[in-house]
Length: 114
Image 1 (cartoon, one colour):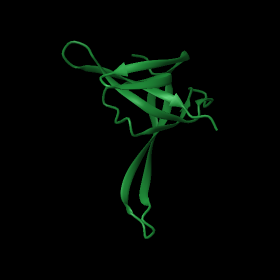
Image 2: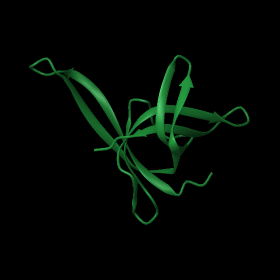
Image 3: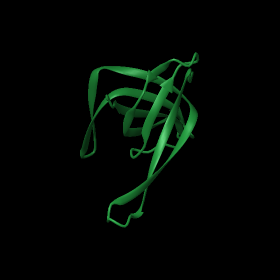
Image 4: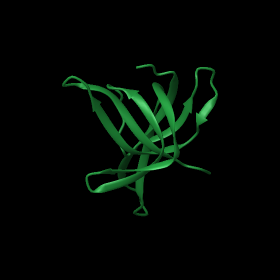
């Protein structure tokens, strides 16, 4: 599968509460993850088990990419460095199988507009 774009995945990890009782979090970014971005015209609503999600884009990632529904996409860029997507929440990670093994990941994201 051709993956002509790169993205940065932000993982947010919950920590212990601070002195005021607010939950503390930390983030770590994984940059230059090979991907392919697809805009979903008008957005789509996906139903997987009991949870429905709405997505504006789909990212194709290699099968060994590390990403969960708790992560965020910080940026997606093309080969020339142009930004294609600047912020999105990961809504659904679908492991697509081929002949009895995972072939690639399809990650549905919702763009965050600021």
